[in-house]
Length: 395
Image 1 (spheres, rainbow, N blue to C red):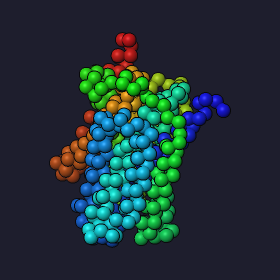
Image 2 (cartoon, rainbow, N blue to C red):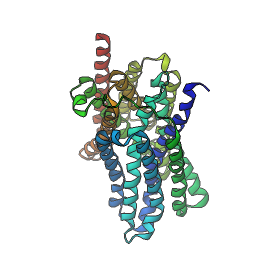
Image 3 (cartoon, helix red, strand yellow):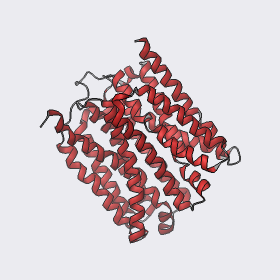
Image 4 (cartoon, rainbow, N blue to C red):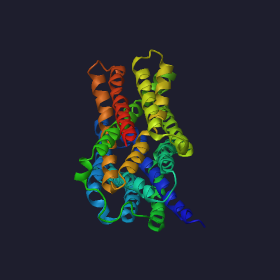
């Protein structure tokens, strides 16, 4: 066996880690109406589920920047799978046994959001530390598993509900929990390498004094905002373009977006050694801008749908590409760098859709107006990538 072959188990654990994150992020939203009908929870309260999930994940990002090096990658990764599995099982059990079902749901969401946040922070540096060639390719392919996990959760859950009935959602929660619970063994036994030597990593203060890192933060905010602002409105475009029901639109929109995003990451994962990453990101940013403009100004619903799908493709490289660029330019960034980059991505993913929604509301619920303002996200990303290209040439 080649020395590098032993790290395939590390890759497998990391792939399943991102699939776990996809389960945590996408399963509960499929049950929002079920929670409303089964437990009589108001839609206003149900809307808090996603808010609490992303806020918890953001909080974990911040905490990890300070403390994850103290507990180590292995302990953190194992803890991520334990909390994700326990949270999903809690979702099946707690709402039915606690006096207030909503409290049971929220406790479960917080627990598996902790796992999701740890996965987001730890998996990328775990893979980055492995001695793989062409790490940009490996990183892009790694992040594609979140996309395929999202598609799998949506499609397989829909099939399960069609066959066994949506009232069996508790059973499916436990089935999905088996993925992280199985992956505990993988992370507990796979080979792990330190990202930087102990005591050699940059501090948070040093990172924020580094112009390149600040560019990385801006890139990640724009990546998260560009991705989530469109993704959260994907179902609306599908309904508008194809005249499908809201239920079908809610499923088909996110699926089409995630498939396109996954394809983009797989393409770079396969051919990335033949491509210039900054040029690929620049082209992706330009395509993303075109997609937002299509959504904002096109009168054709088909063109709006095309813009939605292509936007998924355009944003695919942004998150893993930024991580790869920062890893190469700041090799001593350490875990703090990965955690803060994840925090910036989550911040953009939270703020972007909120900005689009706020602008739309203040223009008579005109989503096109919100999407037009959303053009700012890829524009700033393009400018940031141009700055990085200029710095590369000046070296």
